[in-house]
Amino acid sequence: MKGDVKGDVDGDVDGGVDGDVETSGRSSIPLKIVVLCPHFDPDTAPTGRVMSRIVHELAALGHELHVVTALPWYRTHSIEPGWGGRVVRTERVDFGSITRLHPFPGGDRRNLLRRAAGFGAFSALAGLMGLRAGGWFRRADAVLAMSPPLTLGLTGWAVGLGHRAPLVFNIQDVFPDAAIETGAITDRRIIGVAAWLERLSYRRSSAVTVLSEDLAANVRAKLPTGRRGDVHVIPNFVDTEQLRPADRMTTYRTQLGIGSEPVVLYAGNVGFSQSLELVLAAARALPDVTFLINGEGAARSTLEHDAAGIPNVRFGDFQPAERLNEVLATGDVHVVPLRRGLGRVSVPSKTYSILAAGRPVVAAIDPGTEVPRMLTASGGGIAVPPDDPVAFTAAVGELVGRDDLGAPLGAAGRAWVESAASPAAVAAAYEALIGGR
Image (cartoon, rainbow, N blue to C red; front, top):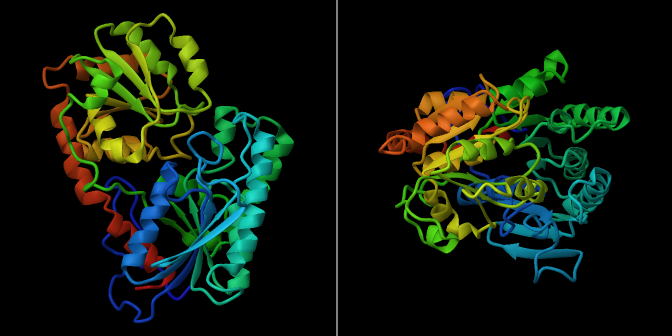
């Protein structure tokens, strides 16, 4: 790379961008960056929103970017209507180009072998199109690849060789560790292959970026001692202009038939890494409170079955991005439950959005990890141990039992996130890492 970050980007208690990032002496020549990611606007995946905003922020700084991504498919695990019919679509945009590829999705999200085959096929096609991005084999300043899927690591390395550019590997979740912790992968042979691919991808990267110090420690332990300085903490961000505190009596409440009673909300992917049975336990103990689980995912049908007979548990479907602020405002208290062991390999980005919406958080996550540190620093909520229904129910009950429903905590969280996690600061960190400053 042309240069490096002067020190890491700080991701511990303040969760923001460290003031030690070198910001003087911007290059007069715009950078050319090839971006490989599984989701991008208008796809609805949280990681897609993250990478889309990073790209647009870098473009606003004058850089040229060529994005290689999938056709929109996240919501239903199939290509969205209006996007089918072509395996590859390329469009010119103001900042460069966007190439969208068939994601080869499988119908069953639990079929890991089928999903792995789909990721592999997508990654191979992304490699070919990545070599074409910005002109066949023309020099670039960097390739920025996102994981998951882990397979994009070696794809990014190969694309980097073709463009004579270093690979910056962005890790959103540490794989296979997260899958092992949830029991999604138990076959030792698959674990061995995945762990080998993980280590190889890290070693082929010029820099690895992660969301927290927990994830950084995990990745550094898998690198030779001399390479551990190549791991940098750059947190995700939240758009505090788009997400703002709003009145709790939303149109969405009316749409779902919810009244003025306190609402405890889980909004996000309804998957097996979230301990959503904690929500059911709290609902049984707090019958005068409505518990809303809003989103879709592989675990939703099981959760709906388990919730049968609990009258104060409601389910809401995925909502378009323009309603996100309204959905968040619908909840008086938000919950972020993550299974034991996952707090050190995953940082739920929804926490930033909840704080931006000015709502208090109850997080059931491994102590000493990023989200509990974030809540301590901001005063924006309560953290309890994971998979503990008694502690979780007590924390939720404490907030919904207050006359103000924990509003001062929400206000504190909002103030903190405004100063700690802006999109511009995150984009500047990537610019500095790649060499634009």
